[in-house]
Amino acid sequence: MDVRIEHDTMGEVKVPAHHLWGAQTQRSLMNFPIGDEKMPREVIRALAMLKKTAAFVNRDLGRLDAGRAGAIAEACDEILDGKLDDEFPLSVWQTGSGTHTNMNLNEVIAHRANVLLCEQGVHPNNTVNMGQSSNDVFPSAMHMVAVTMIEEKLLPACRDAAQTLYTLSERYDGLVKLGRTHLQDATPLTLGQEIGGWRQLICETGKMIRQSLEPLRALAIGGTAVGTGINTHPEFGDRCAQGISEMTGTRFISAENKFHALSSRDAMVFAHGALKALACNLMKIANDIRWLASGPRGGLGELILPENEPGSSIMPGKVNPTQCEAVTMVAIRVMGNDTVIGMAASQGNFELNTFLPVIIDAFVQSVRLLGDVLCSFDRNCLQGLLADEHRIEENLHNSLMLVTALSPRLGYEKTALIARTAHQSNISLKQAATQLGLLTEEQFDEWVRPSDMVGK
Image 1 (cartoon, rainbow, N blue to C red):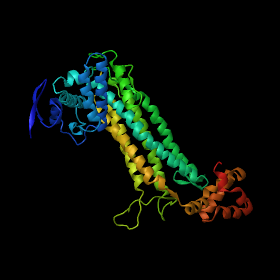
Image 2: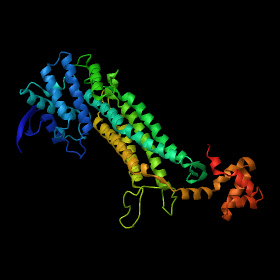
Image 3: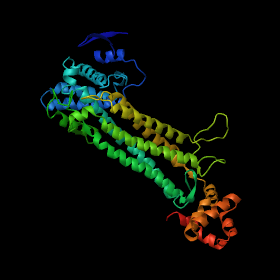
């Protein structure tokens, strides 16, 4: 392999000649051959946006000439277009500040900018990293990634799934079915009401997620090494936040207290807590659906799932609730990621949290998985979900809990006696009630009407 010699403050390093990175990136590759997890591409692109913005801000502040600022911006655009993806090979398991990845960007951008300028006037630290530190750059990129991914990927998926559930709830609004609590028979409701509850689970956590974006809009940029803003212009942070807002199309601000912005990851914890709430609700929805679709003959069998693929390698004709299973596995992963993020956020010392890469890697995975699984669940399960109306009717009228309608007329104890008698003698509620002499068949038919018990 052809190599070239690169230099940093520790000496010479051999770097593959065909790559744009420099000595510090190469040292990270050599010193951290850990795992298969690479820094998420979303982080790389956020850093490229930030570097481009910083170059223009430094130009406008009179600290950087237009030629070098333009070359840096052009190199960043190539990164954003995916043309330089192979230049960012570093592991998540690196320095906890993300410095290696920050320098990876600085080196690649500097090298490419110098090629564009046909000179060596752009330095990774002095020029590309001007007015910045990994300690304010990387947390800023984390917030940028979190906000943009949630807004562009997750919230639209939530809206689409909620809309599908709304359509289903309207379709089955009048279909009365057996309710269940404690996995036992309960009083009736409509299938539309039950599905409407699922829809609200997504809508409520969607609200929580949107609310959690506000603390993430505050960026650490401008704090540099420890929050004091050493070696940067006093207006740098505000101007960068404004530029990033324009570039991303969503609002960001410069954090009011940079010491907090560097040392705490509470905004990430708060936002991921909302993601965990969504995961919990999706777990409930998926489990409800696979319980209600269980069977088709030995289970509840009230819902009919789309038949997407064979369910068994040995049992012909079997169809399994595979989309529900995917949802529940994603939910568990998100819950695990929440533990990772909470633990990592609690471990910062003094002026910096040094668990940044693992936090953003877990966060990105959660958003990506939730967005993907919601789209898949919506398309491959919810949109094709059907009710088995015959089975629903059968289960409804076989329920002992319809007796609850008699409680205001006969009292709790006599009503319970009817239910126990019907259950122990394996007869209907009507038969039990008349045998006990508590009411006539005509009274039973008048007073026990499932459609009158659903609150409409």
